[in-house]
Length: 341
Image 1: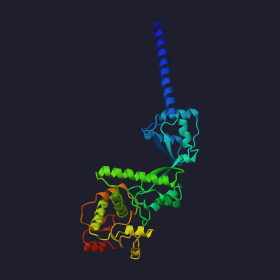
Image 2 (image 1 turned 30 degrees about the vertical axis):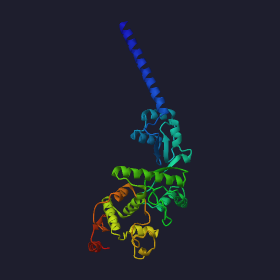
Image 3 (image 1 turned 90 degrees about the vertical axis):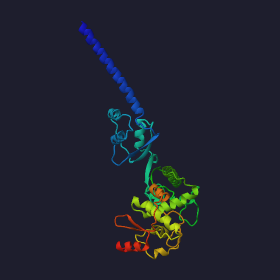
Image 4 (image 1 turned 60 degrees about the vertical axis):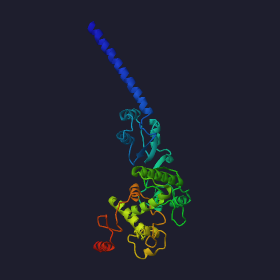
């Protein structure tokens, strides 16, 4: 009789344990369904690649520690036997979204809700950017260039009708997630905002205060460095050459500026190209080009701000992608002949 009572208590305790366990599971299950994502940010970005299923997305989110409970979510999907066909795209998702809304968004019922990944490499000109924007289907090249020309200039940009584009140099090269249906002005604003963020970062990291009236000169030099330098270590050295030449009131004679003046790419700058009458032709005119010739990245901006201390006046590209630097013109000509130029 005592054994029976003991056994009965064990059964009751076991049933109670199962009840509590089931209650915890149910609460956790409902909580996960109501809020499957977790993040300190209000929104997260989810990219669905071609051929990926919902389980693939869950696995990716779990690896990124952005999923509340992968196991319970998979249990839910298994119980409901849900057939989820995702649409390729990039989506900005509210962190507080429900599982139902998450699935609905990733199915991309409304194409306008997806995002376009716009990657602009360092050194791209505004016309390069315009072509990329068109390739991504955001707007036509002509629409983008027209918007650039009509856009209200920030206070640190000096307006000049002789420039090809007043905003050249200030549309920061980076990867942007642009919502479909956004116009050219929105893209330009996003890139300018990013430029201002980077400029602040440069100021903070270098401890150098850059006044508004000095920004364009820095970016102009940075754009020359961006187009001339092939390796990271050459950037502050090329910067020093530019400053040294300007200080001596010599002509910069940089091919990259001539190519920009031409308006089309040439692999080799010939004597006939040097004759172009353009405020960007630094073979013809002393000083910096009238404006930046490309949109530089942060490393070139830093190099323009903090050049190495050298007496170099000349440099020439070597086979390994680095440049040979010298302060002697005869030495420069000798190296040029040695390299077969």
